[in-house]
Figure 1 (cartoon, rainbow, N blue to C red):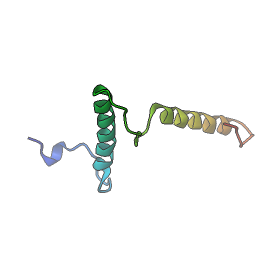
Figure 2 (figure 1 turned 180 degrees about the horizontal axis):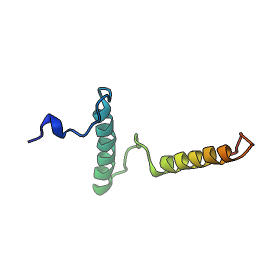
Figure 3 (figure 1 turned 90 degrees about the vertical axis):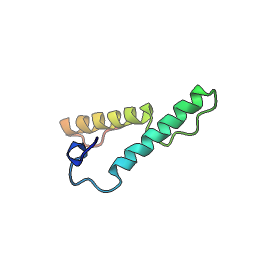
Figure 4 (figure 1 turned 45 degrees about the vertical axis):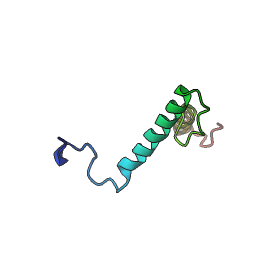
Length: 75
């Protein structure tokens, strides 16, 4: 049985925080289910690996810019 003291969400998170993750998981599960059934997966409405890679490249450029006198860095 889950009690309130076992909930892992930090205090202060807005209403809908957990539901946001639930929606991501729902989209991933729908894509997996479609592929397992041999169907075309619907357009992803959740972050993909490419999105994560783009975020990492952005952070890399921010760090590069911070280490130099040149503040505009090309992507």
